[in-house]
Image 1: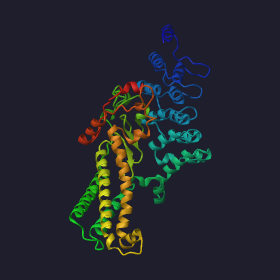
Image 2: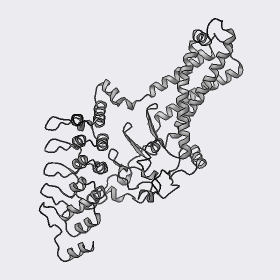
Image 3: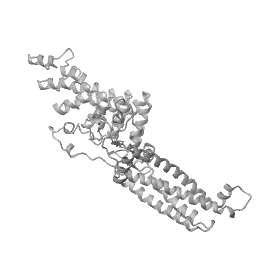
Image 4: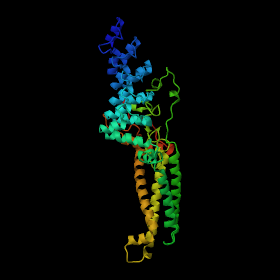
Length: 470
């Protein structure tokens, strides 16, 4: 740094160019040197200086994936982040071409125009699909609209056709699914995931209703079985009550806000001198850990560490656990308690129902005629109970498995999303790179916080999150 300062103090030209018309700022962008850029720009360097190809510092930074550098010169020196080069390509084009997903997130977060076409008619999504950059395509698709999916280049190719022609099957599947989801045809909506907004909640609702009706008509009130005893009747109606309670909790899970993160007032209506990525408390561990994937280009927010954007709900969810199609909603910080109570009630209801049904059949065995196997006799004489037991066994198995998984995760203060993506999330890595959950305060405190307050805390137990991020 000292030689640079001495050169400038002796009258060095900060805008001097080489044979390619590149300035020192271009080379600082290659290395991502923010300190050098500050020295140059504070001494008169032109932030919009372009080389022979029309590349500015923002283009070079995007080409080399220097996200922090790009953000710095845009936020502090107001560099034009959507400027075209001589071929009409913006920094977003180059980030998509090179596959730098963090740079893409930053540019989309700053409202870079995703539908811009270069001289070949290609959008950033065209280039990402052509190069086979899966994560880049995912970010662009989730943050974009159906228009970007259908844009054709000058050769008549859509991003989907380019991906298919190049043999990028995963990208082709992603794009075709996105196209079908945005289609107006019902068949395409169902097979493309658009119906995922409705999910399987209506099916589960009908299953619960059918189970309750079958249990009352075919197990408790059927005339083909002996009269219900007081104890069995008590347990039976407890099961019915729990079933009705499950419907209430089911409605709460479906309709309750799972923890949608609303845009902070500090990020709304900022002026040129109040850049959102400069004003954010970057040292606040609950907000920022230095990961650019915390930027949500769709919601235009900086997500807290444990949150995630759900492409189905189209919101960022605090303490995102998973999107459950059976409740047609996400499970997050504000409705995880309701979800856990719901699956616990479902497990208990199914168990009581199965127990009462088996007891009723067992007491009816002496009254059955001989000559057939026990299974055939039950199927012939009590088909309603058989149907109930088959459906109930399916629900019991699923609910029990889900209850055990959720209970284990609650005891560890970890989410399904974190378990599935532990390798990707740096805050779940200890100093030696091994898995370590910094939010685990011990089983007792984790469970107490969850069942008393309704959610677990984001307070870090070990180690300091800043040291993990670094």
